[in-house]
Structure formats: C-alpha cells, structure tokens
Length: 204
Image (cartoon, rainbow, N blue to C red; front, side):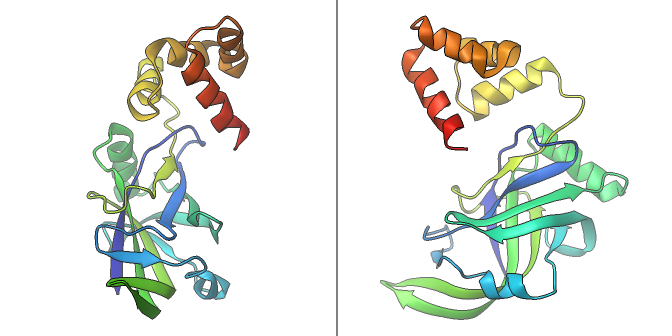
C-alpha cells in the first residue's frame, strides 16, 4: 500500500469533526506524483469505507469518515474523531494544539501513466485516510476541526495566523460576524482585505 501526506488547517465545524481534502487533483506533490480527477471514483463506488487511522497504524482507529466524495478540487473527506477512544482523544488535543498538522491517504495504485517524468495516478484503490505528523501536499488541507472550549484568544489566533486576517478584521468578525465586516467595508476600513474576505464567503 502506498501513502501520501497532506497538510492541514482547522476551523469551526462541530465538536470532534474534521473536514477537508485528502487529495488535490492535478497537483504535483512532494513525491513527484499527480492524482488525476476521478482517480478514486471506482473505489468510492465499492462497499468498503476508508478507515480513519492515526499515523497509518491499523491498530489505531481513531474515528470514522462519514462522507468521502470527489469534487472538482479533489477527494473531500468529513468525519468524526471518537474522543471516547484514548488514542482519538490524544489526536484531538494534538490537532487543537497544532502539533499534528497533516493528513495522509493510504491507497493502492491501480492504473497510472507517465507525463513528462511525473507519475499520473489515474485510478487508485483508497484504503484509509490518516492523521499524521508530516505534510507533503501543501494544497490539500483538513479545514475543519472544532474544540467546544476554544477561547476567544485561540479563535483570534486562528483567524490572524492561519487565515491571514489582520487583528482588527479578526476581532470585528468575532464580535459581529459578516454584518460587522460589511459595515467596515462601507466605512472604507481595510478595503482590500475585506473585499477578499467577502468574495471568499460568497464562493462557499
């Protein structure tokens, strides 16, 4: 079985829930491979559901993937860390702290081709998606995990450090949501940043 490592970030999605992309199509990863659109379609039609593991260890099942699908970007996954399981509770704390910052898929290549010296994976049999320590593909991210007890300071840190917002915009967003951001736009404050933020929201 082969593996591919992916980086992650996190945002509000419901306690214990993680959501993001396990693979991004048409992107050369650090292993020199490219995953073609539709590569997982046959595997997803099978009755076998990919497992959620820790560090690719089959003895460390830490949750369940409730939704796995392909869209125009890549392989989208959404699942729940079963925090009543000690290893899952440990993983949850590590993700919240930023100590674990990666995803990795475990799969078997069924069909591939060469494109200018790069291996293009045309069909892959997906076995598992793991939380891992080291990232490989910077474009594929877990973009949703929530701690029910996150402090305002932690949320602000996520918005500024990870989402790249200025402190003033992050604080206004936390206090009044997008209505407050629109008011800042109308007042001419941080115009470029706010325009980008509202554009990103409209695309969701």
